[in-house]
Length: 377
Image (tube, rainbow, N blue to C red; front, side, top):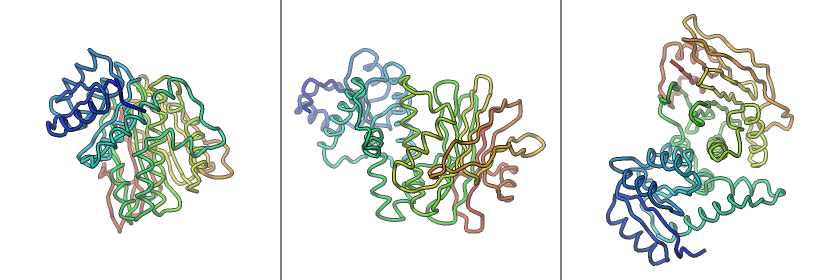
């Protein structure tokens, strides 16, 4: 695919890199408009029509993430490629969740990589618009085609190479110990005894009124747990994009979501067995739908009297050949009640009750596992 007459919005505050890439794209036939900060980029996006956006995540006046979020609200059909120079995977994951289709890491050694990324993004966008169907017999190939090339393929290759790479990739996927959302917040502690954590937590807003959160425990408890983290993040991102385009509400339907994740994890061929609790909260009236797979994790209501375990029957874990369906419960949250997911160890429960939220920590003297808490106050 040639870039002739492709309209590109390039948002970048580095003048040298801006000139290099602008000249390169011009030489390939593209029409490039450049903005040196996020505010200028958003103004141009609002005024003109573009085929694709390329944006740095770290910019003055208006950062790449808030700029991208506002662009997606204006027109979510324009593909965006983000460029990150700070090695913070959580920023990249958030950009993908907002709606970016791919990302590149600075320094970009070869500008032809950017050309290839543009061609891939435009091709995927055209396929989506035309609703091109993939070969239904090639399950794993369809999965890879739906996910970010950099987010999944490159990370899985690194994880295969060394435990050190697995540790680094996994650590970058974990959020900070406190995540603030509109009308809610998430806090957590996870303890690991080795380089790679067999436990993973995540959360995100879905639209303006739904929040999802989940905790997962992977078996076997080795480097494959890092594969599990990448896969779960990728599958969540895909369904978030589907929600934004109006093609799927699976993400806010916990039963459907765990069924989907089971099919994806089985189809991956990685033989990862996963205990998981997945929660969707409608923040407009604080109704929570809680789904459980496996037996290794528990869900609690926390109030002034302590922790109240919620009755969720045992069921098969994700990835089991005996999978049927998850156990589910709906709960209306009262004022002052928090929802918690955690492991059963008493020391973890005590840490939770003491509000010791530390994020991901290495501690040889504490059982692996931990907890996360949703506060709607």
